[in-house]
Length: 193
Image (cartoon, rainbow, N blue to C red; front, top):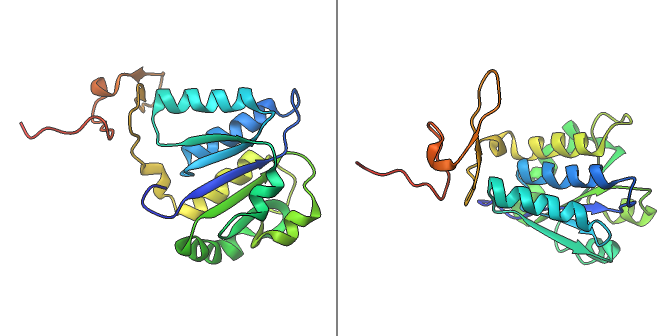
């Protein structure tokens, strides 16, 4: 999140047609739960556009990149790498170590989209498993980011939002930030009148 070292989510691999929705949800989850940017494979352009559109409408900051060579992102990363895999060490066992490593520098969080090369397991600082059971990589990313930020990401303020969701017990309400009851966003400063 903005007051700490950068957190970047790398979606490793994308099968067009098969992974479109999942890759989009990786990007949306990264944005909503505190990451600063997401790097998607270059063949995931539609997913990138969707995440950019959501960022434009509901606020940021959040960046989306398309990269051809995902291996080079991992190889050239200057900081700790957390690879999310069901075969990794339990998140509850390593979360303090990951948090400590992130305090010292930017963190790369790798979320696989198809079979990842063994090299990634070897290069990662942490191979992290959420439950060590088969499940959605989006769920794993959400749990991991919540553990990393200890819930602080849930109170984040969003800059330059065009729309704000008004929380309520029933129904749906999305309004202009200026019309949101009790809501403040970074682009809607409170006045002293």
